[in-house]
Image 1 (cartoon, rainbow, N blue to C red):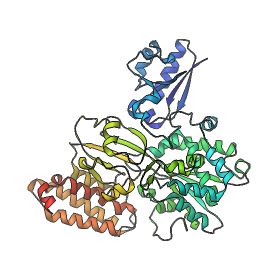
Image 2: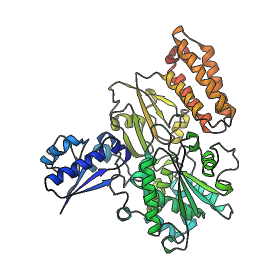
Image 3: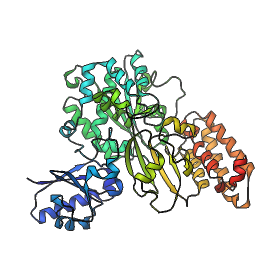
Image 4: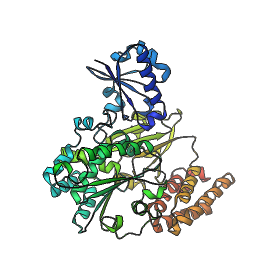
Amino acid sequence: MNARVFIARDAAAIAVGADDVAAALAAAAERRGIAVDIVRTGSRGLYWLEPTIEVATPAGRIAYGPVTVADIDALLDAGLLDGKGGHPLALGLAEDIPWLKRQTRLTFSRSGIIDQSSLADYRAHSGYKGLERALSIGTEATLAEVEASGLRGRGGAGFPTGRKWRTVAVTPSPKKYIVCNADEGDSGTFSDRMVMEDDPFVLIEGMTIAALAVGATEGYIYLRSEYPHAEAALKATIATAYAEGYLGDDILGSGQRFHLHLRRGAGAYVCGEETSLLESLEGKRGEVRPKPPLPAIEGLFGMPTVINNVISLASVPIILDKGGAYYRDFGMGRSLGTLPIQLTGNIARGGLIEKAFGVTLRELLYDYGGGSASGRPIRAVQVGGPLGAYLPEAQFDTPLDYEAFAALGAVLGHGGIVVFDDSVDMADMARYAMEFCAIESCGKCTPCRIGSTRGEELLEQIIVARSEGPQPGRIELLKSLCDTMLGASLCALGGMTPYPVLSAINHFPEDFGVSKDSAEAR
């Protein structure tokens, strides 16, 4: 029997040499006359160990990493294909690696395990059980399961998914749509990309369940333009789903229809906002629509539309398979289930961590992340993308929970955490937030379009003048500008840009030329 090894073809693994390692292993095995089957899988998300080679053994998969092309011959000499541990890169059983073993993998239970292009492999690992159950229990029971699960939108807003679906389901219309927001543009986020590259069938299954639940017959995946690997994976997976009866006019012989289309965005950050996304899908300039009407009432082409992000939809199959009560047993308070956390920036061990809500930032940064990559103290983390607040070390014991973060004036967003050590200039980070908004603004509303430009100019003045001493006039003017943007912007781009700016001023006043004592006094 041929030795069977697994190497990721996830974009991040490829970026650090996974394709080269796979080719080198195949060539070395051929030179030695060794029969080996190399299976390309997704990544488990342990990116500091990529490229990783996993070898199938009777005891389970034995992992080695991070592997370079130069390591291949030595690994083979040390018994790589037998799963022997006589090499410094040997990691033991993959499932026993502490960083992975302590996680709660629900949405990402197959990532890094299956050949993501194989429908048979997907089905062998509980794939399409959720859809089969949804077909058997009907629309009302499917909606009830999603509502019972407590699933909230994983794109950042945290709106109850079941409530959104229910609104679309009860709204009369000749046509309804399911739209997947796959325009993952937040800094430090990659969980959507991992789903689409590493387990794409789960997204298609989730969208199909949503369609059956609300009476939609057509769906769109709006994909970030910078994700060519995800685009290729989705195109192949959609074609397979059609060929095997999981999409089309007669899903699994049920007589129900659902057609799915893939559309690529054009690189605009604002199209991550749901109404801008709809405008873009309709072939228009990506600008924010006023609300109401809500997209659930009047969305794509004026019809009721469910808009969820990738992780929200990918969480649905396990809810239908195991039941809403099973899913809501994870988490805390009103934040139920699990959250895929993406740990990036100046961190020793970056990657994807799926845990139930309630895990603290400190646990993530040190127990999982291993501290900063530079070895210097961690000074701040930004959670929730470029519009997320900066949290200081004093707030690292905050649990990941929507309400706990809201109490701090922060957001969980898409679960991305970007880490900064004590060499960071927080005034410059605040200036970047305004610059980012100015560049990415759709221009439709004045507070965002003009406010961000004036904010960037003001922060540049503060940075230049801070060596001259306190400048309360400029700081107060900046805070007033942020207040206007918070209250008057049409969408979250302008409305949330003040989050990183104000949090930087409040927690790191010394970087703005303000002493901590005077800042606390104010």
